[in-house]
Amino acid sequence: MRIAALKERAPGETRVAATPETVKKFIALGASFAVEQGAGAFAAIADEDYAAAGADVLPAGKVAEGADIVLAVQAPDPDALKGAKPGAWVAATFDPFGQRERVDAYAKAGFEALAMEFMPRITRAQSMDVLSSQSNLAGYKAVIAAADQYGRAFPMMMTAAGTVQAARVFIMGVGVAGLQAIATAKRLGAQVSATDVRSATKEQIQSLGAKPVFVESVEGIEGEGSGGYATEMSEEYQKAQAELVSSHIAKQDIVITTALIPGRAAPRLISDAQIASMKPGSVIFDLAVAQGGNVEGSKADELVEKHGVTIMGYANTPAHLAADTSALFARNHYNFLSAFWDKEAGKPVLDEEIGDAIRLTEGGKVVNQRLMENG
View (cartoon, rainbow, N blue to C red):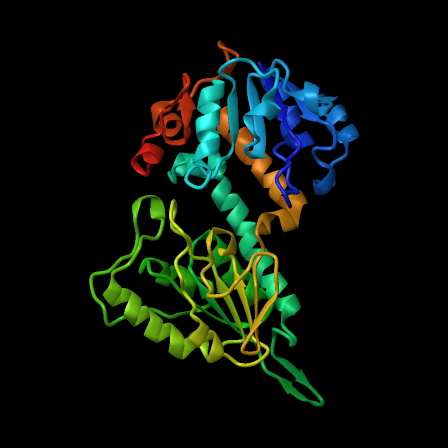
């Protein structure tokens, strides 16, 4: 069993899919491991570190040769897998809904594409969930970046010259990223409030010491779909939510938006009129900017000034913390494959529950039910 980890080639991608730690663990399972030269450079991992862990460090044209499994952060083009065995597994994030042509190309090339972002949100798969591990650090980074952009201090400060008031931070969307954003803003000393369409998150917000801001006038709306993801809401709820947010957002110094719906464009949470109601010098960080954005006018990797408010967001927030996000992503890969490792076969053997959920292609065909249902 040979496993290969490739150097990422997507613009702005600094992460790597394997670390010396996980290389050692895979080799302990009985696999051999190859890493492309320079793969860990942006994550502060030298080629010598991989070699010391037991990996073969090879040039781009050689690294995939004879590979049974290829690991990546973002799925490479099939032509980058030259020399990999027929039917080789490729475990990575594929953006299957947005990059359907790439999925079709994998099927045509005869590779078995395993979309790590399709990992089901069940208890036994938590340690394999790349969306959670990466969102956790993304939520942290969003607050740190917004704090750096904001021209004032976060905590209340009592000084001989007077009092500095604490910043008001509002988190919109309380998934993994939102919860970490709440915790980070609280640690920095801000007054934190948060909202979500899922009523079950109210207790989570309170447990972190933040104030929940929820629509109470529209009954019977839970907002939670399968796997704990948010669903699209009724027009009645959206109207009530917009009114509530408009009155609350005008008082905020920092707003972090994190709302995403799998397979859909990011929902619009903040309009131009709401931005105009905010205080000059306020900052909005749109964590969903790469998926269309929660904020009207936001642009990936650009600072946008509107009505005296700075709107910002990164196309790839986890890539701004490459060392830590790579370490977690690599562990997700290892936790996934090692959980299904069959010692007698000397390779992983997937079960139906997880295998069917993440497998996009097999035997030259697109086989993922979720993907086929969405066209």
